[in-house]
Image 1 (tube, rainbow, N blue to C red):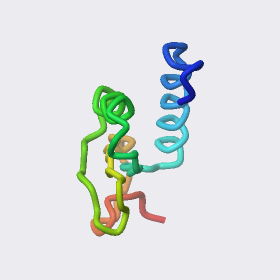
Image 2 (image 1 turned 180 degrees about the vertical axis):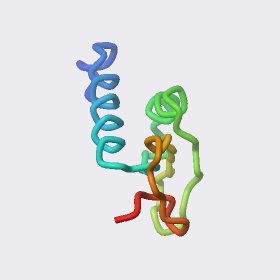
Image 3 (image 1 turned 60 degrees about the horizontal axis):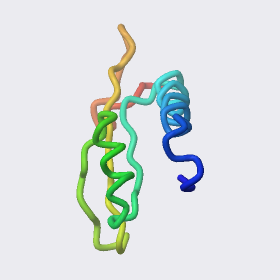
Length: 86
């Protein structure tokens, strides 16, 4: 987030749109990367339900953040991927 846009609720709007888009498409989990030195972003995601999955050697300097969404009622999930069947 550019400094001029911090504190303007742009992050909340973008995050809300992303969650709505992913869950509307049947997604039950997501992962993203954050620069490990960006404590502000890590704190934002943690505050909004994401978990810190740590860093991966192949992604130097990056931390993985993960979130799980509730499956829609009656949804059939693939046991391997925990995503929607079909």
